[in-house]
Image (cartoon, rainbow, N blue to C red; front, side):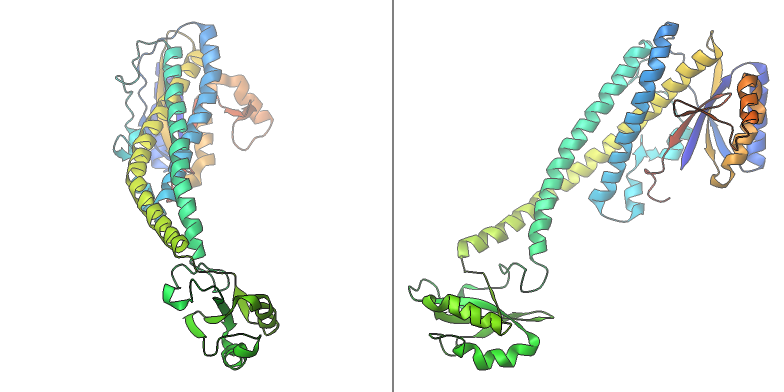
Length: 382
């Protein structure tokens, strides 16, 4: 989803051209258009405006990056349908399209009596703070989530690799014996019979009838066997030769309880963090998007004054192009407003460009002021 924020001089000729544009784009279904009201801001000096133009360009890119990070993180945290994630991407309590279509400058937050430099610095500080807070909150939540996933991964997989904390019981083992030890052996399903026939003779000093199956998965079973400690190595070698795999596991009740407690604690921590984090993301997505729109408004103001001169007299509109008609819409705009810069329009024609636009410092150039609001990575539904 993309929007074009354009401005043209406010004289009679261009107002007529704007009306013509509205008529043409509406009839041909090229775009949805709305007025974009920018208040009377303090102009300052020409030098200051040129410097601000560059600063605002950098701030615009930074702000867009922050917004996209928040939007993507909302989708990641919710780990849910795109529709539910999209419901949380609001600005001032309304969907983003409605906010842009009915944009009003926030006088309380960004007082227009301040110099443009102060407004820019204020917006920059706000975006930097949101970005810093996002990194901090995301790191805290991701650490909890990552540690929990790491422990949860241990509970899946086959009996050769998965944790046994949720499988074994104290009663399955001979404990606190100076001479005896209980081992756990993973046996393929096809070898159950062979195990039962041979385990007692794999080495000396295996306790007769000491095996039992305590768990099973699709590939095999987990069996206990009790033997004398001094024949462990010999038993392991013989077991391996018969494709019976001894798990390196020795029962430690404290360790097992600690592992279970850690999972419970991390699950509780994640749940406790989730609500406040999602609330913060929703609030600050709104704040960041509103700030970004004001940065766009400042760019239009500064560029319009630099392009059209003083006294300040221009009209701004926001267009939502129909995806299928972007080239046609550009052609219509260029035809209607080519008089604003005949030389540039001629150059465009001379180089035979499909879409009127010269690449100047990576910013496409048009006879009128134009800034894009690209919401591609914000719109989960697209």
